[in-house]
Amino acid sequence: MPELPEVETIVRQLQPAVTGKTIRELTIYWPRTVEGDHDAFRHMTRDQVIRSISRRGKYICVHLANEHIITIHLRMTGKLVFETDEKDKPYIRAVFQFSDGSYLYFVDIRKFGRIKPWFPGHPLLPQLGPEPLDSDIIYRVLSASGSVRAIKTLLLDQTVLAGVGNIYADEALFQAGIHPAARANKVAKKRLRQLSRCLPEILKKAIAHHGTTISDYRTVTREQGENQFHLKVYGRTGLPCPHCHTAIHRITLNNRSSHFCPECQVKR
DNA sequence: CCTTAGTCCTGCATGC
DNA sequence: TGCATGCAGGACTAAG
Image (spheres, rainbow, N blue to C red):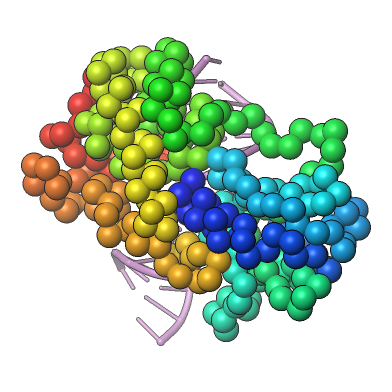
């Protein structure tokens, strides 16, 4: 499940690799993968030079020379890869062909991923909170919310902070010693500060490790990330807490699993 | 304002 | 072995 570090890894690889390339053709194999009118999309991308690639939250933005932008969200199982293997073949949903004969494949087992054309004058992305890479900004956003929602719910809300998903929310809450179900407005200022410091650290470390591969995530060159070897609580139900050796618990919060140490993480 | 459940999808683990 | 069931969850939507 690509979150900010995985998307950032992909964008950093794509940026030097496809900038300057010209899109010759976009082929769509699963219609719902591409939002909006397909003919208009093909028309606006045809023979367009890619100016740059950027990231906003979990979105990849492809900036074209004609001022149009393609936004790509990988959701759960989406990948962007330069080459495919036999296993990928049934799950290729769209293919960009470049004028130099190279390709960029959008492979997505579960078909949740979306490619969306943006036309000038339209809203580019849904409402998104700030990037969670600066502790002062995170602290400001979290303490100002005054929300009664669970702190974990707040972290996953893309309108509050853009880019945090289930893995890094659990990891950051563990590092900060905060119970995922703690009411956001009840968390001590001190711990909120700790969380605000931990979150960017964890995300930056994950970027340095090229992301977390649990099952489907791969880089553009099909490599796995290495951050899965550094997780402390996510997916470690029943295993000992790295701090106190208590078994890690798993609870369901807003229909999502949360992993935490019942000893180290407190509700306020 | 907030929560819950449903939707989209497929693969995989589990249980009988 | 085969079949049914449930689980995984990012973003969105409808209903309460």
